[in-house]
Image (cartoon, rainbow, N blue to C red; front, side, top):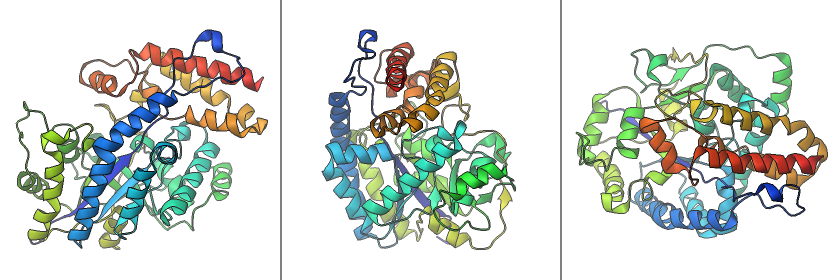
Length: 413
């Protein structure tokens, strides 16, 4: 169809290291094990069989069958570590996708952390480590940055630009767009960082900084139609088919329809018997018939060219979580704040110790999921948090986490 917007598919792939039942009597013991290896392996293999392997097999078929089809991923460092521990078959399936030349891998914080909120140095170290891992595994140096949980601000955008990224993903939050469409590239306002921040960033640059950085916004309504509402029989759009979905997307107009979602949507959150894989299989065939093109985030920016961009001004943090689209999913109550502050108070001592094992443990404790599990929200958001949590309650999540922090602190002393 003439003048149809591009479609840009991006998938977040992540698995945390879940904590085992740490008892207070174990604190200070010599060989304390923080993470539940049996549980982590079991979850990884379950999701691999339901999602990663069948979804990657399907994506490879679609990429081979449809020459104009392109997709993108952000694979967290802790997910890649678990691939090397529990799932070389999963890693090989992502390598096969990379070899097609039409899959873009994005950069993020290695440990899927919220480190930017407290430590610029730690944030830059993690981004640098993640880009090196992507280069090693897939022979790509990422050009686009995706911060953990899509946490974004004007300041973060400027840091990403100085590190050398051409684009950054963000939530198409209504309160910032103020009636505008999320289906266009935007730019952040000019932001002047302190000299000391620039000095930190200069040590971890990925490449030369571009003149500006494009902000690509998630169309959350269309993305959530697939990620959350696809199998909801009470939803007015049920059952959703490829034709209806594409018509909705085209009606929203703009330059690109950015569909950003967790990869576990396919087979894990939306089970195979819902028809989610068949829906995914049908889309590129339909788009090819309707002459609709797909593009990676870099492709979206390239196709936009030198056209002027409006300003996306996020002077406070915005994320893709919960109704508020802010930080309250991770920093919304006292136990979350106490855990977060206790963790980052240890940074100077951990790094001064020179102990690589303690540093690795401390960094795994930064993964945002640990704080997400401590959320005490109610209603629909609370149900989502409960669905993802491996623990009986937010307070159980805090108990295990605080015991881990206490033990880590004792080892440093």
